[in-house]
Length: 200
Image: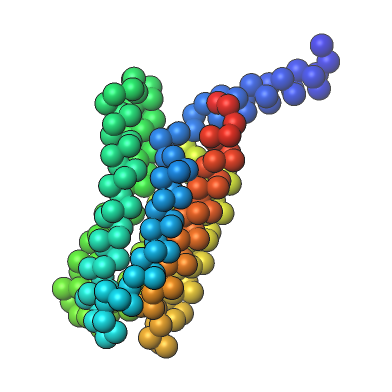
């Protein structure tokens, strides 16, 4: 066996081990559902949230976020207790633990802004998007490498939403809808083509 052939085999073994370390608890179908829920929420916002009501905007989108959190969280918890064993449970704790701080940071920032002044609510959509992107990037060690495109999408989306603050358009329905809807659909595609379509 030549040195080049041995190196190729070692690289293949390394790739297989690396793929086996991926966390597979985030299911693409649930991420697709969350993406379409965000787009649907953008359609509903004008009917449910009156213009010039920033607190109502926050309540509306926090409600959407909670619904989008309940579905994957329920699926993860079910598999954690019903199907996963020691090593798989450890991987779940590590992957979820990487993402959770950004969710908590978003919750605390939202509470602080709403308690301080409604005038600062215009900054929240951009902050939400950037924090979500940070959570996705923090989870990268347990997800396919291409997930950095999803993180980058949310970073850029957050910057766009922040740039809309002076014009007052950061609270527009399609700012949040397109940012989170398209970002989640992108993530679903990455999960499907890099994890679910491929064998571990």
